[in-house]
Image (cartoon, rainbow, N blue to C red; front, side):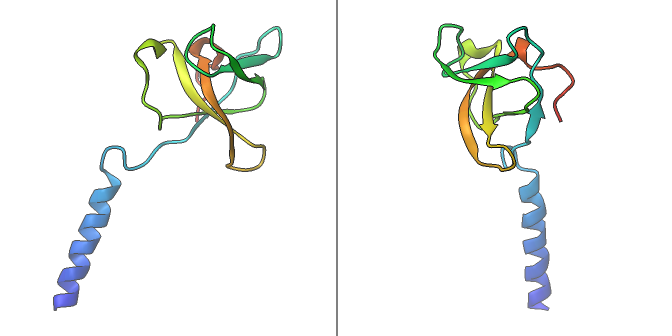
Amino acid sequence: MQSRKYARRLAALLVAGCFLPGAAHASLYCEIVATKDGFAAVRSAPSRSASVVRKHPQGELILLDDTRRPLAQAKDWQAVSIEAAGSKRVVARGWVHKSRIKPDSCG
């Protein structure tokens, strides 16, 4: 009898934990908009004058990074992470201008 009560409470806590804000992060992979030079600049800060961390080629997906708090000046910029091909290992983090992310390509 006592173990059933414990099991129900544990199950309720586990289910409730799934719906807590910030408990999980969605992984959205997006495509880069085609550009004449063939890449999007991933920058160290949300600014065109910030240094380029990586030139990310079009055709490769970027991962929207929802773990970093958006900065006030980042309204036109998206925090991103770049993963190594074929793995989940992050090789670069930075900011991409939202105009470089292909609309309706994220999923």
